[in-house]
Image (cartoon, rainbow, N blue to C red; front, side, top):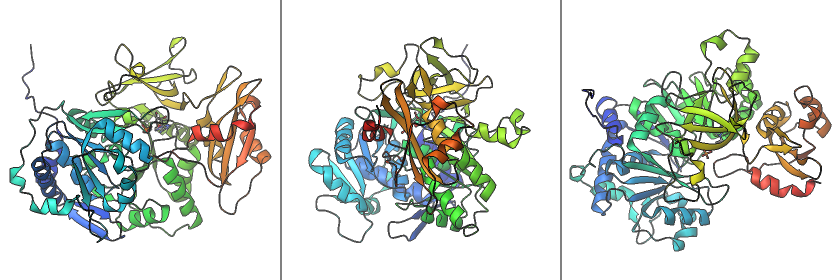
Length: 538
Ligand code: AMP
């Protein structure tokens, strides 16, 4: 017998419709490239989005066509998030930190028909334009300079469009809505294709109270770029809930962000640890300078949040960090480290230990770990590769069969992350499988060592990676950036680590550097470090 409930499609236009009809008055605030602040409302956003839908249809964009964006976080980018999927086309956000070669590869692979580009990013576009073939270039005017000949002006397209001419797509929730390519640290980037349904379900589940706990009354500042896994889905989630959005434009340095967090009374913000390490350093250097009493939560993910950072924010500045794990292939929210009831009366130190883990799987995300002996026990000790499945987890890559081995025959996605899982379900990411240090039969977690070194009071950042070793196969080495005006020696850092690690787990070499190379999404670029320092091995 079938149930007798309506088959109401879970689509992105339904998200926009709700924001328009119920939260039309709520604000969307952007810091523009000239640093001025632009303010408008959800109803203005919805209207302009419908106009853009009509304009794209007039340009000949059909269901399934890919429309790319090369943009920072701002209100026009938000409009494309809704305008493109609303006509059944696919929003393809391009990572502006990738190399011109990677970008031209991705655009060609995705067969993008249109690219919508920030005027301030035209110098980047110029570096790969000769290598791609698209139907239309649309430029978002930002500088007061004329836009290039042959390109279309985004604002003129909107002002001349008639939103009543826009024909909505047929509403099938399984239709592709958006795509992101993985950052491709090994091999070519791979396309992940989200559906309307996966976006809606991810928006709902990630906002649960035991998820990000996002509410209508919040003001959200996503530091995570809208070109990195749809800013963790936050533009969709905020619009669904009517949450005020503060979009930081191109200014992602600690001072600019703190200024915006304070002035706009932001209540929740989200980004990768490198951003928050910079912010913590600024707060430590100027205690009391920034008034952040509105800020109730900082969501940290994309790489491991060091325990010392979580402790530092809370104990020195009264700020609450929520640690989450995810991937481009998981939309991205996969697990969230909130404190379950039985942990809430544990000592603070135990609570910090749990909050530094990657947490419990999000609702509907199933997890398991596997090593060479089969599925791992949930004992918090046995390590294995994390496999996941759920309604917003990829089941295959776009037009690519060379990575089919990332998907198991029984329908799970192999994350490439090495984890332990505790009996109570808490996951701890020990490493990426390619970053774990294999030393004489033992696996040493580079993530754990990094977190511990970053707990040293003189250390701003630390990355740990493998160097070759004739006897042990691989040994750990660390690159360490010291805080301005602070000093520490190799021996001091080793002494600091000794209480927590066995001798074999301690780094053989520590190099003090001024900067650690980062990937296009702000994570430590360990492949580059391994290459750079391989001569230090034996
Ligand atoms: P991306 O697809 O670029 O978002 O990268 C996903 C990868 O980032 C994951 O497979 C993990 O290796 C890493 N990652 C994401 N969040 C975390 C986290 N909270 N802790 C540790 N690693 C993380």
